[in-house]
Length: 307
Image 1 (cartoon, one colour):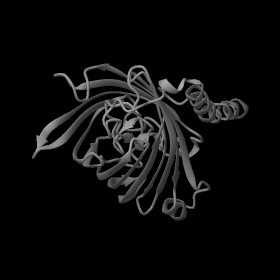
Image 2 (image 1 turned 90 degrees about the vertical axis):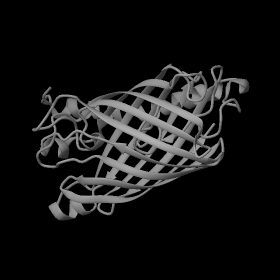
Image 3 (image 1 turned 120 degrees about the horizontal axis):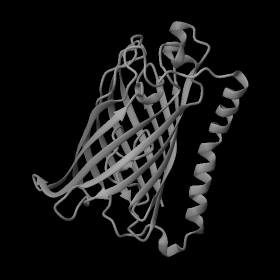
């Protein structure tokens, strides 16, 4: 699918309308939460840390991989909600993400993430008129089978992430076919209570269909490939104590742009859950080459507040 030609007024109008979606969605989610009776707000029914943290695209999971888990701690008769902020510094780039998620009845998760990638070194080196790229991600995830802890089957969820750049001029100029796109994924997660030397072990596998370049920040599709590609993602984590979790993640990615080749991502993380209301995750991320700048790696820090 090739990028459509946009008139200046029409494109600007659509971008202006899209820019209002994040605030509208977040306001609606929080309004729904505020109007819910106190008994419907997430209580103590689920184990600490079983909601995961908020990944960079807003879904429940690790830092870079969505899990089958759902945000918050609400049970089947409750609502769970989270707000989060994430910062990643690779040396040449800085990524800042803010977002929110609402889970209904431990069945359906709705999420929103607003991303800003500071171009830093790339802007200076190429003399670009842009200092940052921005993207909104609207997500939905449905738990369809199994349970994270109980029973014989892992928890399985299917999810969708609709992504749209706030300004697609630069990605389209370097070969991307579109400034918006949709990822579809299925995740399976299981928490083994007595596994790794007596510690709890969480394993997750995700299969994603995507056209996104660098998760969408460099547009969708390209001169090398435009169709959706199936990519694999995985996470493994050990629960050292009820409040401390350590783990690793891997995320394969498509390689659509001849101008900017793309590698898989990986990270090693530690997450602290002092209570069900607050979590802090820190990681070291290996991000490969991004838009011609090689060997991007650095710290990742994310704060999540749950209600």
